[in-house]
Each structure stands twice: as C-alpha cells, then as structure tokens.
Length: 238
Ligand code: SF4
Ligand code: SF4
Image 1 (tube, helix red, strand yellow):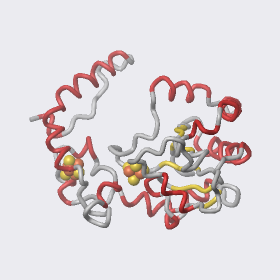
Image 2 (image 1 turned 30 degrees about the vertical axis):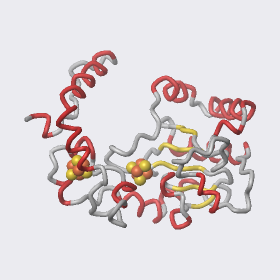
Image 3 (image 1 turned 180 degrees about the vertical axis):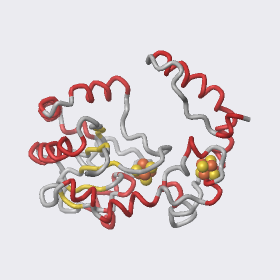
C-alpha cells in the first residue's frame, strides 16, 4: 500500500475572479482549453474521496486551491464537508482548520501529495501540473494504481537526489535540499542541483535557529510533549 499522502483539490481549476499578476496557475487553462468554466462535479470529488479514504485513513489532509476554489460556492462546499464527515474525517478537518496543517512539503524530506483537478485528472504537485506529470484520471485509474505507478515514483525520486553540498550541509535536517521546483531555476533540472534560495537559507538558519528552537520547545510543552526530542540541526549545536 502507498504511504499516506495529502491532497490538494482544485475544484475550479485555474478559474479565478482576481487575476493576480503573480499567479502561476492561471496559465494552466492551456492544459484544459476546451473547458472555459471548469467545475468539479460532486461525483468526481466523492469518487476521489472514497479511494483516498480507503488508502490513507486516518491520515487524510485536504487543502483547497485553484484558481479560486471559493468560486464553487457555499452549497458545493457544504456538500463536500458532509461527504468528508461521512468518510469519518471530522477530526482531520478540525485539525486542518484549527492548526492549518496542509501540504507543507518544501522543507520536508520528501515530496508527495496529490493534486485533483476539476475533471478528475491527478498530478503529483501543483507546481508540476503539466502533461508529462499527469498521473491519470480518477474516473479511469484507481488512485492506488497512480500512487504506485512509475510516474509518481519518478517524481518522488527527484527530491532526495541532493546536490553534494546538501549532503554535507549543517542545515540539512531543516531544509532537505528544498523544493525541486526551486532547484530548476537557473539549472534546468532538479536532481543534484542547489535551490535558488540556498544562499538565503544559509543566511536565515544561523540567524534564526535559536529562536526557532525556543519556539519549538514552547509548542512541544503546550502540546504536552515537554522533553520530547526536537530535531536539532548540526549548525544549532555550534
Ligand atoms: S516539488 Fe516542491 S511543492 Fe511540489 S511536492 Fe515537492 S517539495 Fe512540495
Ligand atoms: S541550505 Fe542549501 S546546501 Fe543546505 S541543505 Fe538547504 S539547499 Fe542544501
């Protein structure tokens, strides 16, 4: 069985009424040129939810994005929440709303969540909603098959293919070589490349790690985890 993954749902695809100049997702309409008003059906969402819950419960994480997902309207989301609660994810929903835990992957050891587009197409990351990275369509291919497929595995192999500098970096346990998307910048490839933001991290971590550690200790204490081992990068010991 595949490991638990979080998911990013794009019910209105690239549709948006704001048109922010920095948005990288508006251009995705080029991938769905036949769809001028992309709208996810509840059937598509329920089909995905059913398979996702069977594969990954109780570790289900939902994030909503687009475009602008609220363009789907309140009725649509009320029905979605009912379906999620029926799927037994009340606690996860609350956790996401209260704690905001959703698809924080850039500084994690590995990539991996699933993007669900309005028509059921699935991708491994919304930075990589591109034809070459399409995993399949939930109406045609079971989610489990997609997550075990070679394309998802190839995507997952990108992040751990670190640059030699990362392998000996004192901040590695805080950064893990960073997001492959930012390794492409200026390099044209993600494997064995340094992140565009690496110089910034190397300034930020020495400046902030002591305060980060104090905050982590406070959070752990408030959560009743006082004394639990914290992840301490080599640099923090200096
Ligand atoms: S490429 Fe970056 S944003 Fe996408 S899953 Fe990997 S770490 Fe996350
Ligand atoms: S700070 Fe730079 S060298 Fe260190 S792990 Fe991150 S990307 Fe790699």
